[in-house]
Length: 432
Ligand code: ATP
Image: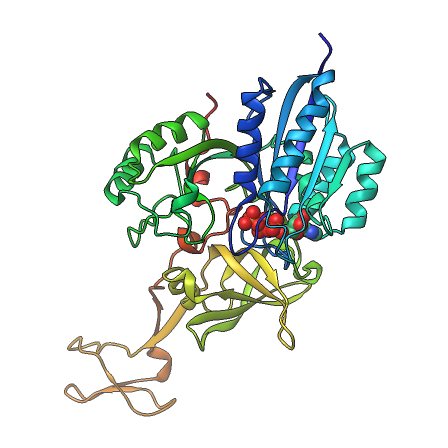
């Protein structure tokens, strides 16, 4: 049989008012399956640069691979393009869908590199289009067709080093835009039974459920986990109080830190997400809105770090840093007019805390009571025993710091989709 692998990338189909590219993918996949088309592997949900200014919400694109006979290819393409045309929010100015088809067993190195760039940096429609031409990928642009960037990047992301899964359940059209009806207690139970093989689905500090979005999109809930089997088991434990139209298990780069790159301060650029090591160089201050800002430096320069208000208790760690503490900052880089570049903290490792020493008055060598100061540099005396000692008799005592060396992260409510939760570091994914 003349079988071919056809990779299909889709992006930029939604707007803030509705729709979701993962749903467009789900409908296209179901439609293809109903025509007897087989998928190779899991469909993938690829998160792109989280700092990209033109994203609608979570900057995601999707890709799936069909294993088809050559003669089926035109029908597959036609089904996908029709689905995008029917479902995409084409009437919204900022929605500019793109679909890319790429046929082949191997993903070219150039395409992988492009994919990494779209997750970690910024590119253009022209760059995507010329790469597609070079590697023989077929692009379909709707309106401006900006979505070909994400669609191509999704095809290029082979998820070889780290990956997670998300099972996404979708609402019936008549319920979209209304409050989501999911039994909270069942989500808590699901979390208790499946954590840490599922993660980020419940905020441990507030008990808040994190599986249901708050946007008018078709998603009812998404359950994040280490493997497909666990997300399916978790899905069975969650009680939905409204009908589920369909669901898809996506393999994804969520929770992998794929967006981060190691950098020296002087190398840091706006729109990047970085891992920068250095020492705290200015004391944390709390600014209007409850955001905590401090600066750190390495041998190449100085940069601000921010723990914004939505990061809640994470700010308490940042607040207690002092000048000289050795830290590693993880986060996206923001550029604001007239302000220095700022790392929007996602995680913070404290490597070393500088000791805080406090001068303590000496005790009386006779009665053992704390002696009184006679004034600056004039020594100490015990009034009762009439004993005097010089200023050098004072002791320097190391104070207990209110924070400890270790790794800290923002709570799930403020977490970027790509950020690797610390629980994934503590309990790495096991192979099944
Ligand atoms: P959602 O997550 O709700 O599906 P979104 O946040 O993914 O939406 P899109 O509507 O897809 O946002 O818009 C993002 C657009 O920016 C897409 O057209 C995508 O191709 C493009 N894009 C994404 N990342 C980059 C990047 N790093 N450089 C240039 N363009 C990008």
